[in-house]
Image 1 (cartoon, rainbow, N blue to C red):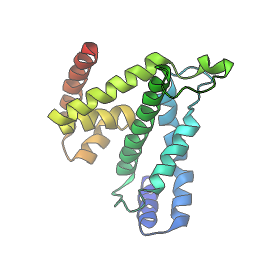
Image 2: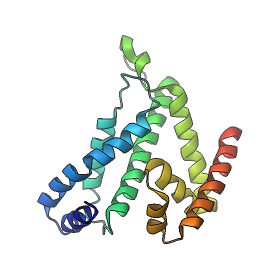
Image 3: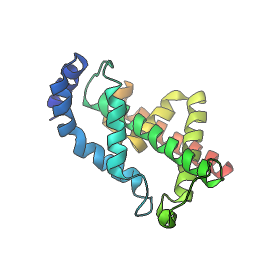
Length: 185
């Protein structure tokens, strides 16, 4: 399957729409698993569901058709980055709405939407990751690939072109740094 994804990515990058259609079928379940992982902390009945997250990621991936896909791991790294931005944008908009800006009619069941605590934590994580990226971009990327991309240590090492022990050290240091930063905010 790994070779299939890489071949499909290459064909898609060369303009083969049928390859993209086949790629959707091949990777959809893995992306749904990742999306489900991200959405696990959300309340039932929320306005953003795993399927919607995957669909939005695919819509944005269509705009990335000119990317030179290296392989399956690169594809999932880009997908993770897209999902991160979708989730953070959604969380920020929820917080924006929560503060009363953009007032709109409210349905009675809206208390079932995304947990405000989860949205705030996601925004805080994103802010902390951006701060970490300014200091050490590789450590920030390790967190993004592991947390948002669900990549394994060896896959992260491959994407970043470093050794597995380096990834493990980066993960440990980044995790400690992020926890400290998030406690401060």
